Image (cartoon, rainbow, N blue to C red; front, top):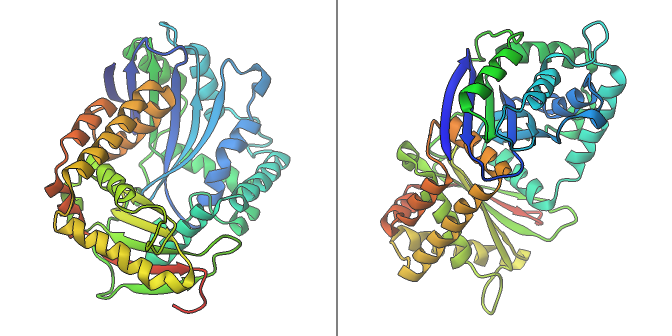
Amino acid sequence: MDFFREEIRPHVFFTSLRTHRFQTGCLRAVLLAPLRREAAAQWAALPQVLLGSAATPAGEFPCPVEPLVRQRGEIQCVGFRLLPPAEAGVPEDAIRLLSGLFLTPNTRGGLFLPGCVETERTRLRQRIEAQDGHDRMRQRLLERMCPGEAYAVPRLGTGEQAASIHYVRLSKDYRSLLAAAPLELFYCGGASPRHVAAALTDALFPLSRGEPDPELGTDVRLYPPEAAPRSYAEPSGEGPSALGLGFRLGPWMAQANPAALEVFSALWQLRCPAGGDGVPYTDVWEYADIYKGVFLLFARTVPENRQAAQESLMAVWESFCREGISPEELEQARHTVFLRLRGREDDPRMLEEFWLGQALMGLEYGPGEAAELAQGVTAEELARIARSMQLDTVCFFGASDP
């Protein structure tokens, strides 16, 4: 695949992969906004509002359109992914549609239609309420771990914030966002990257450009704010109880290797069996964020096994610090990540998502090269990650006392 990246207008960045491998191409555009408590819900509703306000009826779209709401560190990414045919020519119809979604929605007096905003406000609340137990526990652990940090703001906002979205404020704030927010564009298909870039430049010509928000970015905090880990108890809701451990990745972040962190995450799944005789938990899952420098670890366990579960997980961590990783474990973890990364080359959607992350980190190698980097990760590098980590927060979900 031929890689191309260029700033085609001020703060409008275009990444392209030219390939004839797929029958369906991919065209994506997302606006980048600081993740803020007062704005997260309305930006999460924005793609659906723009779709509902499209001048072209949805049934007449030239290709499928998917709304996007993502979080990368403390950056909220909102926009669309279009799936045009992967033909050799420039996907002009898809580009016109993409431009129209952002620039010429149906409005009344310059304002979004109240009925459309009310409908999407209700749907957003339903999405927030429908989040699964893993998402809820992760969010609550982050709120305990990162109070006062933008990272603790939910990607979709809260139900209360969603209910307060008003069409007048959303309309005015959207105009400000559109004028100032960086725009990340991506194309995967058979057309010439420069021809697609030229078509996008023309289609987005009416887009006014100002200076990005100076707070756009992620505040990476290497160390916990207190010497001793903080401990909390939270209700588990209707689900089973679980233990959550929140780590800061520490000074390793200064030379962070995304592939190594993926291998490190895979290693936990190998080392922590799902139940069994003498194991004080029944399931373990992890969440690693290379953008923020946090590593979260969760284990299903009952209240009477809480301390034993924590001691067991901490013992695994300590063994990693000492390079207590067998050659078989290392090879299996590397191979798991290798296959996962190479698999991203088989789907234009997965390529699009991968390259958004690369763009935000300033990296220009693809998933195939990332897979080769994963194959080269050593036990010493994994030990460096473990030794750099510091336990910040312990949270038990399902107990009344910390």
